[in-house]
Length: 89
Image 1 (cartoon, rainbow, N blue to C red):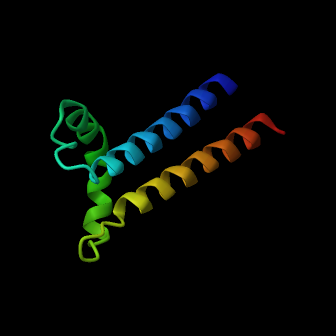
Image 2: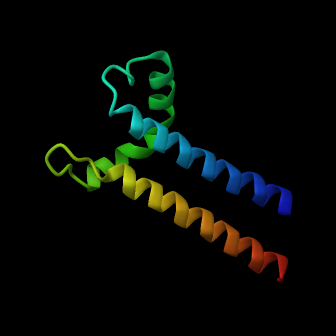
């Protein structure tokens, strides 16, 4: 059981890093249009889209990726707590 929870936690952390890199690409002109940026976009945009519908941008600043990363962190912590509850520790 620990193996499954470890894989899920690692996947959530990896996805958080994908989002962070995708956000940083917006600081460089044309970076999101590169093949690497497009791959990250296909991975990140489906998760970011619901947050963008809820949280409108403040001028040129889009806070939805920050909220999305916080949600992933809470999910990771919740998964960790669930593991400890199920493991009886």
